[in-house]
Image (cartoon, rainbow, N blue to C red; front, side):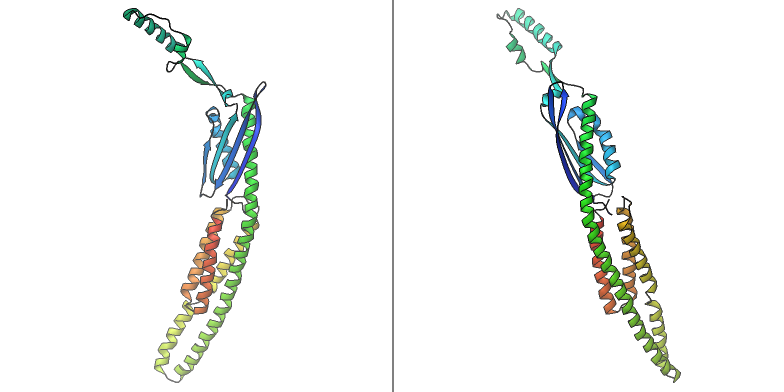
Length: 296
């Protein structure tokens, strides 16, 4: 069964951070179709170090597509940062204040309220995330990925149904082309037979027309293209029900071959009825191509 590249999943859980403290973790994953695997991760600064293992896991499980992952820590966000005084800056402020007070003979004392209103006297220090919290985060992300895969599979069921219908359409129409070609060839051979009688009776003009007719009959023979088209179509149907996960690129290759054969059929045989059916097949193959672009 084909696996769709498009899907969405989300997961929100409450995780313990420290003794008696918890935080809310929200994960969202969206995937779109792409020729290759591409991942964009938006993580809290305290979890940035997990980006590489997360991307590796996404690539292994999702194989192909443009993937967007967002992880948000809500609730007690301050658990991951703490405010610390920048002692050196405070000392410099105090030293400079004393010097200024002495030189300009300024009266008064510096209070704590004066200090905390000064710029850059505090900084934010990131706390190290514990191993248990790291494992819990990866577990939640993994669960969200599994939900995304389930979503992709559900889309894949619809894709399979649609592609099967279109492949059956192409199969019936190529059989119709085969029948029309036999009728067309029968008509041309009858013309050649009648022309041959005229040639045998000494009609020189008929001899020239007969030679042109033989050339035409040889050029319009599309049996080889019809056989190859049906063979590629059988390959596409087998791939549709196969167990292999990554099928998108193989489908693209088969579609190129199918398009090549139907184009050759339309070019070689200028019969109106055959050309009309060939156009219908081309339109259907274009619809298949649009669907295939969304297969992993």
